[in-house]
Length: 440
Ligand code: SAH
Ligand code: SF4
Ligand code: F3S
Image (cartoon, rainbow, N blue to C red):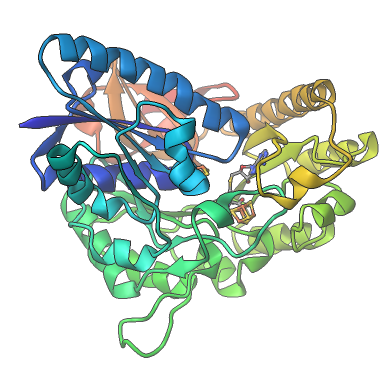
């Protein structure tokens, strides 16, 4: 059997894609390995979102090329390929920019990878495919089995929002929603093969509008939750990412009505300043965003909210930044991701004149992250002495770990027999990044 090694960068969608790539390559007789030295095919599933992410590709590729040389001396051939958003962004240029590459496949074309590998082996000519048809991809992928107790399931791909800083609309294409029948089949299969929790994925998941089971009427996300929740053996449903003002009243109500839908929402605000939001081409004001949070908390008072933030967007003043700091206190986020603005080729924001110096971005990021960590610790500390239902998914060094309904990482000293089960844990310690306690 041949071996495939895949290094995944970027978002959850890329993790999902990597799993599907492994499934597609398994059909060609490739088995996954974690050891690069064993790999006949090495892939990097790339991300283009920030400059740093794209740069990582080059360092990883350097390591792969070294291993390829060592293997060559042992008489073994190695194919090196890139998949993911960098390929889509660069197109044919990828071969000029990234030296030593044999195969390149964009995020909508990876179902064609087996075919390209065979073609490469036959001709030894570089292969590239970077088209924009998500539909064809999803229709041509093999069945997906669960790889653990939690699974990602892409229901929607691409984005029509064109936030002025973001490359995703150019790398993932326009918005595409998969049909309910396809999604439900995949979800059932995931549960039959061991998944207890499914996270439904989309770049803008609230605008999912896939064809319903009657083949005539489209469903919305709330209806999909309802149907996925009926799958026996599935314990938890999550979804990400929500665009703040696209979340519908139905979805908000689902947080009250559907027990399996976890009380957690990732609702990226990006900035706490209306003028920055406008320049970012985000379609909401801070007060509209806060109204959505209010509605969610009315429906589900304990809902945990997380967010993404960008600091140092072109033109961001000290005053704008302080408004971002304020929103963090107002919302009391449970978790957050924060980034320095990174100018990306082809985006409107990269052409804006008023770019912010690196040192200012760094200082603002430092301040913001300190505050976010403080809030996260405060959020976690509320649970000291309380019981939380935890789905245990991993064991290591005599401990088991899993997730609370609010996405907190929870550790306990216990035998791995509890893996795949939800157990009540009495929380005895809390830090910014995790909780620990005793199973009761
Ligand atoms: N579709 C999602 C997430 C997209 S990318 C959404 O709309 O929220 C994930 C995060 O990366 C974004 O939320 C944003 O905070 C960050 N990001 C995107 N482009 C960026 C850029 N050019 N510089 C810095 N951060 C960026
Ligand atoms: Fe990018 Fe904006 Fe679309 Fe999110 S909503 S993927 S940030 S363009
Ligand atoms: Fe990166 Fe593409 Fe995801 S650019 S964040 S891997 S959609």
